[in-house]
Image (cartoon, rainbow, N blue to C red; front, side, top):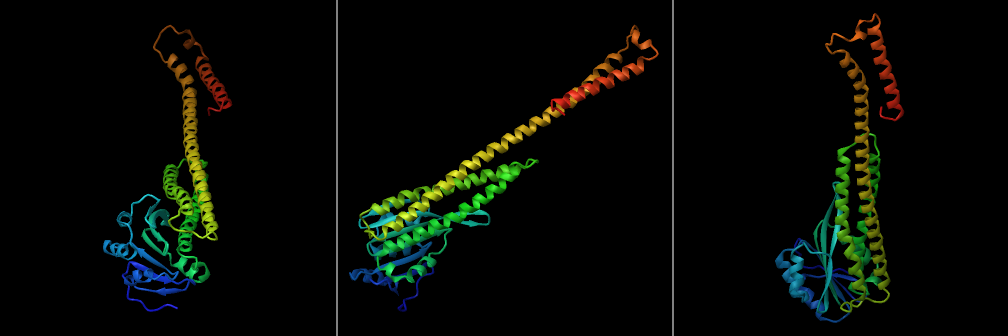
Length: 332
């Protein structure tokens, strides 16, 4: 049963203690160290969103966190990683959200100890209240300690990758139709380039998660119960599938860009051929008429009564034959 707690700062989303049976009790930040001082099988979960420096120093004091880990959490520009500091772990992972047809990235930092979990969100990231509500409906799971909460948070982050990848797949299908359209669209190659750039950023966020999860399962710093480890391996499998999908999409986007450029080159070649064909067709009458347009006195053909008609017929015949030939070789 929840008990009233002191009003928390706005950037503190959640501050609760879970007893050995997995039941929640809201506490104040000042009471965190008191709860941890009693070895009764409980653990504390604090959720923060873009906290100020003073609040992180308060977390350091209450949980005994390392200076370097606190420094990393203050600056939301960390590469995905897992580091051990004494009896606690610091995990940095990237989150992603699709906002206004673009992917916005954020970061989530986790401080994990034998009896505590602190989650710090920066930038584009969905709240973990959904995760907490789901876990609190199953107190038996929370009775396993903070490792269950860590799994739920990482699983939630990975699950949010999949809809974004699915959107990328749908967008690529539509762009492929534009690639093979009759008319060239400059915006198509630009959007393909932007899509590849976003996929590359997604890959930079997703790929390190595999190493993080593998290390987390093996680390001795935070003991993960044997019955919980299969769930971490399941998340690892999901990350691997998302990573494979991203790699496949990147290759398909690169292929689409090459095909688009090739089709543009072929289309330009066809245009050049048609222009050359029409130029050749006009060259024959130009040559003949220019020949007879010279001001020579002694050109016997000019004095014949049918010379003009023959000349016109010869020009027409040469044009028709040349036109049929160019059509045959598909230059017109």
